[in-house]
Image (tube, rainbow, N blue to C red; front, side):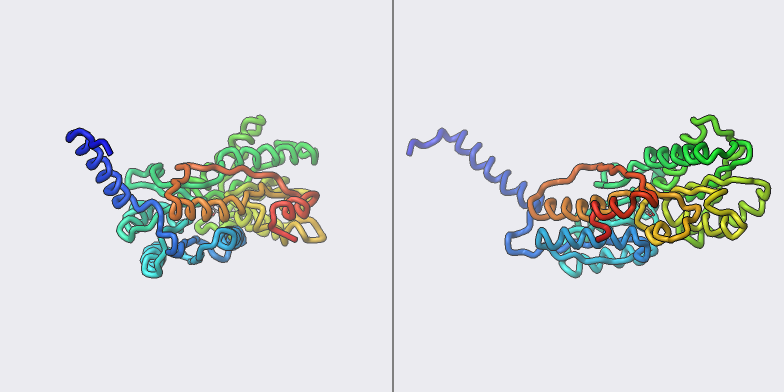
Length: 337
Ligand code: FCA
């Protein structure tokens, strides 16, 4: 074999050395025989939305052959110990919907020190500067657009029912400390305003906790302050917010004929839509629990196994489900048999 000139031989060796060094520095792929373990940490394990995310992540684990470790972490301490536990159990990465997005820098630091890859789902981490941590891989809903669809649907329903705008008011159940929640209710309010609805008849009911009791309490206070409204249009960050509002409003004698609410998620209102006597809960923007559960787990798997980095930001869309179509749509999406 013709020998290479000295300098190019050096260059080749150096090149080889660099490649080896680079592959050592970026442990892109796990060894073929090393089992892949992925954590899936959620903030509200009792909410059907998160139960479904876990279910679909479990399907990905079965299809792709990895171990899924599901952890419910309802506060900051639980999140940090969950990450340590995952590392101790041999996980190489995790997907998380954190109970508090301001834990962002702490979560990133802990994932780094435990050498775990990180993808956030639903709720984007907030940095020390108060801005979203755009360098952390994220999959979430197109919150503003989905909120706008809620607002437009409420106005459409108001018109269809022949309610006069002057007798009608908006109850927006808000949870503004969470960016995706604020974007949703802001989107709904924007669409309502764009239809010409009076700004001074749009009332916010801030929830202290993002669950049904939190919304119920917030709306009960609002109703005491506004006793003369004839028709309510209800929006909120998710189904739980709107369900809590509907319960509070119906306790005051409102019915499906005098009040209408549209949720977001579509997964937490199934029993409500199944009721034989329709309530004021008209429908919901069904998000893709499959994309949020299956796709995030799948992206994490390929990142760990093949060194394939996922896109930094993925956004999902939703479709309106009502009593008329929910059985069919839920079946198509693999949520119901
Ligand atoms: C947030 C909400 C959930 C769901 C998800 C997509 O995490 O709390 O109910 O709407 O975004």
